[in-house]
Image (cartoon, rainbow, N blue to C red):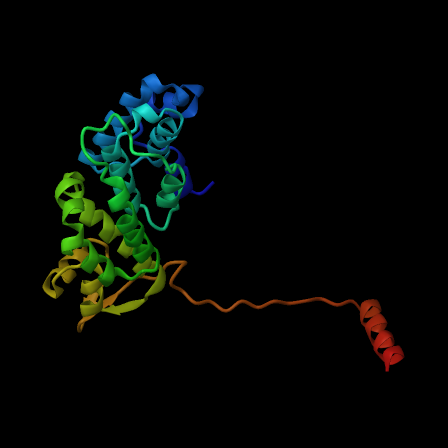
Amino acid sequence: MSSATSEWVTPPTRPELIENLVSGVDRYNPSNVSILEDYLYHQIRSQEYDCLANLAILKLYQFNGDLYNPDVVINILVKALTSVPFPDFNLSVALLDDRPPAANLDEPDPLPALLPRLTVLHSLLQQCRFPVFWELYRSDDLESLRDNYTVEVVGFEDAIREVVVRAVKATFQRIRVARLASYLSLDESEVPAYVEKLGWKVDSGVVEIPPNPDNQIESSVVQENIKLPQLTKVISHAISAA
């Protein structure tokens, strides 16, 4: 198991109480949903993230419709956006049943209106269409998402920039400052200081990204060894076929 996968399964910031809930049969106990929801809000305030704990909430909502809280679901999806290219968002959406409006809600459910927009945002990140992502995210159509949800998620925009950095690091050796600025939704003047923290360099308007296993093109040589008896059979077969 790679270190990235290991941290995805068991984040180092996960408390022992949550570890016991997520790893055991207690994750199906509806009386524990408030503990998991409190943990989600801790993640929102602290810039931590625990996908499996959040999926446990959605599973409890599946089994217990009366527990359903649309604000919690939206917060889970917002946090999952920051995990691209991991499959967290799709895993979360897969646990959302088609359900009639919850009778226990005092106000209209915001999820049906926001889910398609969140799905589009996720697709744009997956497709590395970062300038379009920022344009949509900052549009009037998503004002309610920003004002009611992402504003509460500490470091949300920086976490999206980390998604961008992962994609750029895996794709480029050199990229123009102007292009990278559009990907990060930063002014060009802010890019040098930002990439310096990453250990990247800027030279004549171009950002230089250090070599890594993903952005290096290496030729591979495939060598096949054919023994003489095998070659003789091939030649004999070719002669007989002619």
